[in-house]
Amino acid sequence: MRLPVILCIGLLLSAQTTAPIVRVFYNAKIFTADLDHPAAEAIAIRGDKIVAVGSRAAVFAAAGSAAEKHDLHGRTLLPGLIDSHVHPVLGGFMLNSPDLDGWGREVPMADLARMAIEALRSGHGLRGDILMISRVPVTMWSNTDELNARFNAGEFEQRPVFLWGADGHTGWANRALRARVGLTKDFLRSLSEDKLAAFGKSSDFEPNGFGVDDGLAKIVAALPPQTRDERLVWARAAVRYLNSFGITAWLDAQADVPTLNNYKDLYERGELTAHVAAFLVVQATSGTTGDPLERVLRIQKQFADVKNMTLPGIKVYADGVVEYPSQSAAMSAPYRNTRRPGDLSIDPARFAQVVTAADKQGLIVHVHAVGDRAVAAALDGIEAARRANGNSGVPHTIAHLQFVAPADVPRFRQLGVVADFQLLWASANRESIELVKPYVDAAIYSRQYPARSLLDAGATIAAGSDWYVSSPNPFLAIYQAETRKGPLGVLGPNERMPRQAMLLAYTRNAALAMHQMDALGSLTPGKQADFVVVDRDVLHVSSEQLKDTLVLWTVLGGATIFGSDPSSH
Image 1 (tube, rainbow, N blue to C red):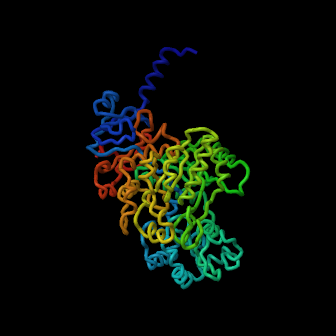
Image 2: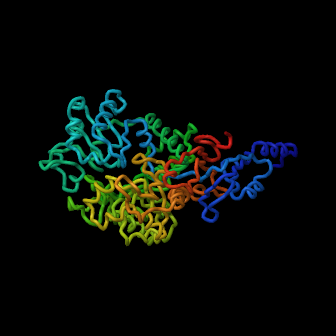
Image 3: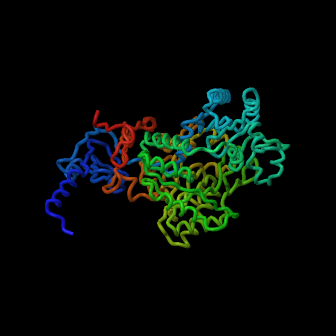
């Protein structure tokens, strides 16, 4: 149907008057994360898209004379930062709960007891009638006798107490809580040797309250269920907190349907100010049967209408954690004290089937692997998928990578596997030295967090925080990656990372791990107008200055989500 000329003119004028104006940000030090053009002087955006990046003259010309001009007064502008491994809803819970923030930090027992008493009397730490303290340093698990003395007497004698370890894999229950969950001598005697390794005990099978992985799960089962509204408060707090660090996108590494509902609720309220790639957990053990992806594909369809959230893959746990007394990370040589090699959480044949099926569907497999045996098994499964399907280009990812065998280092590039590090942990502290070195084979121990080795071998390095486990502040992590300093010295100085490589790890490479490089991860025309302005030149300041970097302004799709435009004041 032909429209009348007057109506055509009216529609044209309406389109012209409602089209977003072009905004130009100039007089800035811009790191683009575009490998062909890594630096720029100005950027122009229209609505939620980038329209030009480059020299001031070129961007002004492309933007046109009607564009708004914003002078950033020499500040540094980066792509929106991306956390490639994070647990936001649990992080939001920590923000709203008694929390010792104990990763890599010593907390005296007296301080723990004082916080517990305050949390009990105020009611702030109660989950039902259970007193819960989060992110307790894992160094505490070496002092279970003192924990039992302090938390089985006085105000805590009849009160169930749960201390949740800062690593997310461990915890401790006092006597009242142990009785509630059936953690008794008889229960421990009923377990196989492998299952028994998940619990702390005396020589006569008296439980001391410690649990790792399956042991933790038995304790956590006593906690009351969370309501959707309660979780929504945590999710909202998490989104705002992550935005305050310049984070505009993340990979949720352990999503479930309640978490997806939280993201959906935020989206419907206009509060999901981030791009979220949510990964559902899939088991790949010898006891699992059937199609492991049927549930994932069904849930994908269920949440397909939630803008800014995708479900591009699955999460698989290949092992646990290495620190004493947990020692559930799968190692190629046994722990010196137990003579056990840790726990491989996957059946290699079943895992290969799962990866091959996921790869064929275009789904990323994101693997938790800490020990070198777990890393090798994860690579083997991905290699089987590559042989079966050819090079699909799906960016399968292995996260944590505390130990990688030298023979496996080149396989990351060969197989196109993203190496997803949490390098805030690469610190010479009690966790990485005193709780690991005496128990792990010396040759393996010397290779903790081998990020530079993988980078030099051509691997793609992505960066994540694993928050709630540790801080989500990217600038602290980049500082740690390039210094590897800690209170006990320097952890593997040969593995220090270059700063630009870390900025890429938090931008384009993290976008790859989310399978969203076409829209995110660099300041390139046509991509999302996501960026962050910081208070210093993060490419050139010293390491000590870098760690104190402050975010001034975070922008998602052209809209302010934290701070304010520095050109306006």
